[in-house]
Length: 155
Image (cartoon, rainbow, N blue to C red; front, side, top):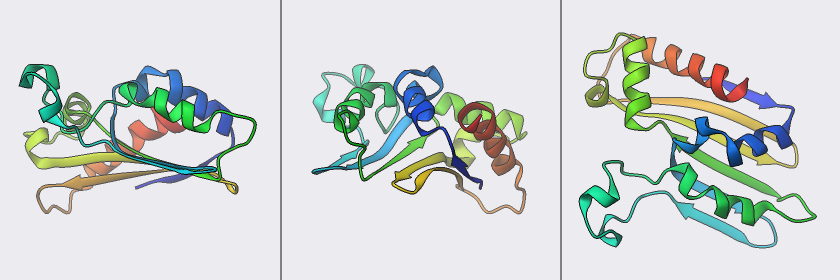
C-alpha cells in the first residue's frame, strides 16, 4: 500500500476526465460534496441490460461511463468541499499485474486492486490497496500494484 499526496490537483483531475489509464478502470464508489452530496455506487445493475453480453463480465461500471457525471458535479466557480473516488483494476489489468508478480491464476487469487483518490480543502491524496482471495506472506502482488500506481497514476 502506498499513500501519496498530489501537488497538482488540477492536473490529476484533468487526467481523471480524459486519460485512458483511468477510463478502463472500474468505479467502486464516488462521492462529491459541494452544495449538495452526490454519492454513486459503481455496482452494475445487470438487469438494466437486454443481454449479458451487453452488460459485460465486469461487476462494476467503467470510469469512462461515469466521468461526465463526476465532471458535472465538480464544475463551477467553487471547488467542491471534498470528493472521494474508489477505482478498481479491471480483469485485464488484474491479469497483467498477476503476471508481473508471477501469480498463477491471478483472476482467481486476486480479489481486487484498488486506488482511492481523496480530495478535500487540505489537498489531494492517492492510496493504493490490494485484496487477495488467499492468505500469503508473499507481497509481490502488492509491490507490483504499487509500482503500477506510482508509474501510471501518481506520475
